[in-house]
Amino acid sequence: MRRNLRPPDNAAPPSGAALLTLYSRQGCHLCDDMLQMLQAHGLEPNVVDVDTNLVLRERYGLAVPVLCDGDTEICRYHLDMARLQAHLSTLN
Image 1: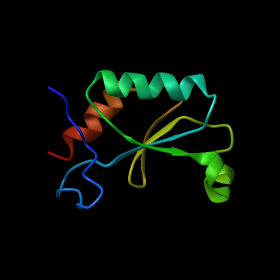
Image 2: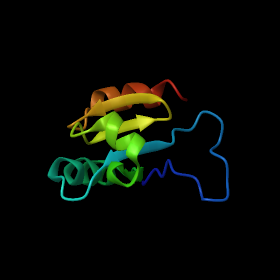
Image 3: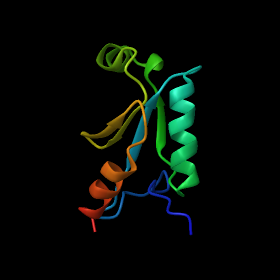
Image 4: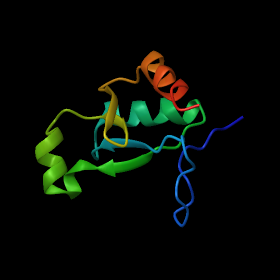
């Protein structure tokens, strides 16, 4: 069963639901790997290219990928399923 944590564009996320954001950049193999692993677990994060925004580029520099839920950083560089599952369990 696929879990899509991203609500439709015209809807607010349900209370307690994660809105995962993957901060990424073009040509980043670690970013591609993390996205593929998330998708393999049925998760569809909002992917944001940090190079399209000066503030994000300065904040993350070369330190991508970064998986966040709102302002909460879940993991960086590699998908940490234990941390992700622990984070998601606090939302239920």
